Amino acid sequence: MAEAVKTRAERALISLRQRILSGALSGGTRLFEVAVAEDLAISRTPVRAALAQLAEEGLLDRAKGGGFVVRSFDISDVEDTIELRGVLEGTAARFAAERGVTEAQLAEADEIIRNIDRLLSVARVEMEKYSHWNSRFHDLLVRLSGSAALARELARVTALPFASPSAFLDDETHAGQLLGNLRIAHEQHKAIIDAIRHREGARAESLAREHARTARRNVQFLLSDAAARREGSAALAFVRA
Amino acid sequence: MAEAVKTRAERALISLRQRILSGALSGGTRLFEVAVAEDLAISRTPVRAALAQLAEEGLLDRAKGGGFVVRSFDISDVEDTIELRGVLEGTAARFAAERGVTEAQLAEADEIIRNIDRLLSVARVEMEKYSHWNSRFHDLLVRLSGSAALARELARVTALPFASPSAFLDDETHAGQLLGNLRIAHEQHKAIIDAIRHREGARAESLAREHARTARRNVQFLLSDAAARREGSAALAFVRA
DNA sequence: GATAGGCTTGATGTATACATGGAGGGCGAT
DNA sequence: ATCGCCCTCCATGTATACATCAAGCCTATC
Figure 1 (cartoon, rainbow over the protein chains, first blue to last red):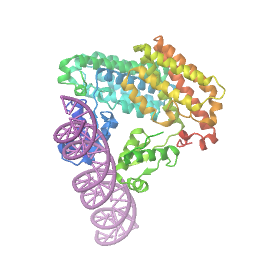
Figure 2: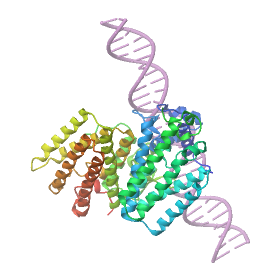
Figure 3: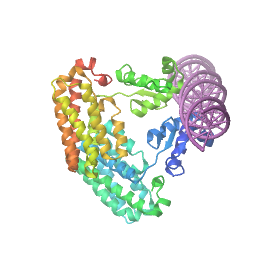
């Protein structure tokens, strides 16, 4: 449960972000400070702060003469961004392998892997828990890289909801169809850690890249399914056809 | 020559950025709105806008309870960021090779290469012109990738002055010492375009990565030279020893 | 003496009035 | 009728007053 946020700027940020991601504000829509302020019943000042923050997150573009426009994403943007995540996570894995990690970190990785193993051992996978442990894995991978600069850029790329490692994984509707990919993905998890453990940089990098492409396949599957766009997959609601 | 900016927020942005990059504001310094506003003789409003923008550029960090802190960079941040640029430019080169580019774009690349050839053919290289054409080359590489998502992230990484492809190249003081690296770098330029032309994705990627490491060598050389830190290299003034 | 409570202080958050500047439309002249 | 100028309106930029909130300290009480 999210704690109640205090400032109006934060509330405005959350509200606007939700509207963009849900597709209520479609790409190309210009956001006017006064209109948004009236709509949210607050003054222009916190609205500006929220808009600036959304621009930083990449959900808005700054218009030419000031002002903001809702950014629009097409399928190629989604694919490229996921590929980019793969490239960066690949670099994280390579750094981890090249620079070395501690035994404690490897133990942490093993524990995450065991937990996912357990989740996947039953017929009906609990997607929410899988999503949780999957996030843990990807967070750990960033830490294993030991690079603050890399962590920063990766955080930026995965701020786009469709590029997050756990995008769509909380979608129970398609759990059955995604299950095969989940098992493949988890084999990749294991292989990545194995490569890092044995200091195999090139292998770790290439595996992490391919891992992101597994996620890309999920997205392509969901985007091709017209029904999914309407119901389950909130993270794709704002992607232009 | 930069055109005269109109808004106070922009002037504040430029002024603050300059102070950070010149080292006048050292890493870890907290910036208070009122203090900055008084110092620049403007109100808090444009100051806030400027601070938010600098945070977006990565020169400031947002403090916990609001407020901003000047970010500090150590050598490993610099190295990692340049490596990251190499990874992203490598991806740009790979995309270009895999997805194909137009004849017109290749012609543009050839022209840039010819211009740099000419500059390097004389004993005393005009660093400013080299820097210009080098920028042209790297801009073109991004365009060749055909990926807006990639362009965006690369722009972000290269916003940090020490990570820019043309960082330090306008430094006439060390022109002689850097000349050898320049020739190597330009050979890499040629090879990258050759790989793209022949659709050799892996080669293009690996060359572009190595190309960034040539830049990294320049930085390491300059950082190891105490004199350089004091005088010539403005782009390194704010890097923590 | 220790602790709890409240006050002071200093910072950011918010509202709002006013300034500025650009785009679009209307009106006039040719 | 069309071109061009000017005016008006609307959106953002800016200043400033006020609100709020957290931290630290002082004091009073146990």
